[in-house]
Amino acid sequence: MSDVIRLLPDSVANQIAAGEVIQRPASVIKELVENSVDAGATHIDILVTDAGRTAIQVIDDGKGMSETDSRLAFDRHATSKIRQANDLFSLHTMGFRGEALPSIAAVAQVELKTRMADDEVGTHLSIAASHITGQEPCSCPVGSNFLIENLFYNVPARRKFLKSNTTELNNIITAFQRIALVYPEVAFTLRSNDVEVFNLRKSNIHQRITDIFGRKIDQELLPMGVKTTLCNITGFVGKPEAARKKGARQFFFVNGRYMKHAYFNKAVQSAFERLIPSGEQVPYFIYFEVDPENIDVNIHPTKTEIKFENEQAIWQILAAAVKEAVGKFSEIPTIDFDTEGRPDIPVFNPTQASTASPKVTYDPSYNPFTTHKPSAAPMTPHISSAAAPNDWDKLYEGIRREPSQETEIFESHEPMSTSDDIIAEKSPSHYQYKGTYIMTAVKSGLMIIDQHRAHVRILYERYLKQLENNKRLPQKELFPEVVHFTASEALTLKHVMQELTALGFELTDMGDNSYAVNAIPSGLEGINITKLVTDMIDSASSHETSVTEEINRSLAISLARNAAIPQGQVLNNDEMENIINQLFACGNVNYTPDGKKILTIFRQQDIEHLLG
Image (cartoon, rainbow, N blue to C red; front, side, top):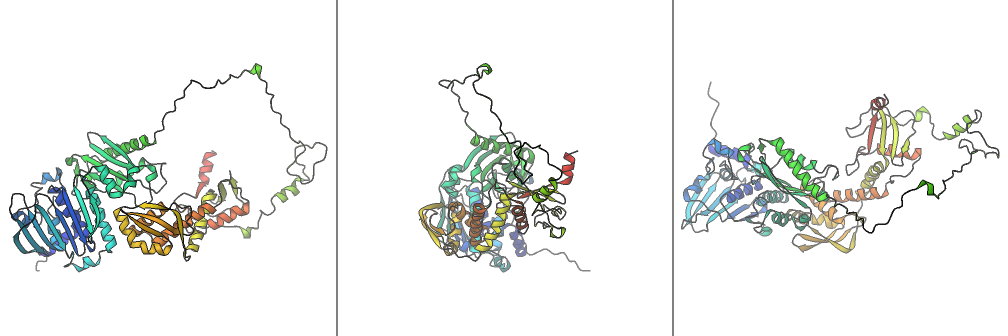
């Protein structure tokens, strides 16, 4: 039997390895810019054409490479950072595995111009599909100039699965931001199709955050910091009012490296319990300094997932630091009660009381269970056996129904309720508690419904259907609002501007990624325009919903909230029955459009347990 195990050719092995490191144009920029940072660059220019499909160029003023090093850099696992295995646990640089440049060269055409300060001439190197196609001396400034063209030209299947230029450019901006936020001492520029997207000067962390995300975020952040033997944590967390459902800017960095960490994210969110609505997130920019021996950054090809040795202890430190920052912001100044000049409050003296006790007057002959006028003579308070039956029958007129008319509550679309929970009792009568809650018996116990929230859900779904085919005209704003966008949001806005105009928006470019909202669709009066526009852009960039859907959703929520029955409004049994029936005909019976709970079931066994 012949052997079946064979070594892969280098070209194939390089393409397989490149698939782990180079997933899209943003991956190329991440690897090249990290190398520039490691080379000591103080100024880095990034230029992309067609969102990186056609060309990516990264130019830095770092220390550059010699002729020999420039060739070795494209050999797999060639690195200047690692000499032995233990070095993996004492890393202070970004790249270290020696996979970035070989992976890029395996799936693109690469040109490199580089020179060291001590060399009179530099090196010009050309590579295509891992093969060196040319090398010659050249005149160039100190540093490195990488030009990557025709990414995935030799892997058409990979190129076919790239997203739209807008999506890929947003990915590039995200990768750019993650590096720029760590190195404020480095100046960065990013240009897309010869249009400047970012021009970041050297600054500090706080100024860099503002330069990237706009002046508005400067007013939303709270400083935080703590130093312990395990780690140092610094940075900024958002104020509660900065919370949003999507598009929250959340960044963790450890030892100068961006990371994703769902466990630490929960630590931050725990500090905002009961301070922000359910489902919303606060922005944060948090920087960890940890002994490199206590973390492992080599568990994922993209190096964004990092393992901590003392994860639980750091979680507690982080949660405490965030709570302290939020607590300082929420601190209420102590009221100083000045005793000087206050009015004298007399002490009560029962012997000098001059106010008479109030007297209670009532009609002893009044009986609510009788329909005839009371006689002049006083009546006894009890109900006579002859009159009682007729009066009670009248009291229940219109409420009693035949068993064939009983109403069932249908099964919810949410997992909270089961069919056993939502089968109603035979009696269709309901009860209202404090003009706020509808209480009705179900098979498994007692169901309590928030009447206002239930009506909001009913009206929301009704209005949403009406708005789907309804065209709205623009309505001019007397005082146009100016909305500030980040560079990424501004690019998305330009992409969806035609759709916004068709909906009835009129936006004017004011420069510096700011737009004046001169007109809005009719029917949106009273809605927070700034929040609506930013939510639409967030949805468009994440492809969760279209701009039209976001507009209809926001308008339907606003109309439903304004038209829904208020808390405290007294309802009769028929009105309560109507709300229950309409609620359980909705697509979602358990939550309002903004995620608030509508109903709960007080189970029979819990009631029996309480009553002993």
